Image 1 (spheres, rainbow, N blue to C red):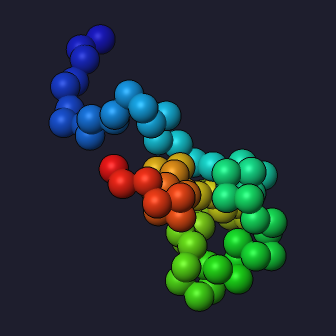
Image 2: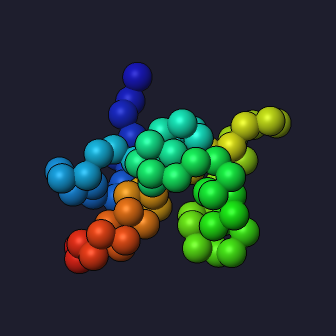
Length: 76
């Protein structure tokens, strides 16, 4: 099988690999529970969930990590 080279974004070593996070992990990283996360999403103050299936949503781990870093005042 041939391997195809693609231009993929370079992920810094300090950050974990980009992935889809489900609600439990998003709650753990943000420190907020489901209802507050959805209220913040409605206000546009939290990354929007992405539909990943018919009845499933997830969050982009990069967006959540960036949101947390902004709240902590960490400049990247």
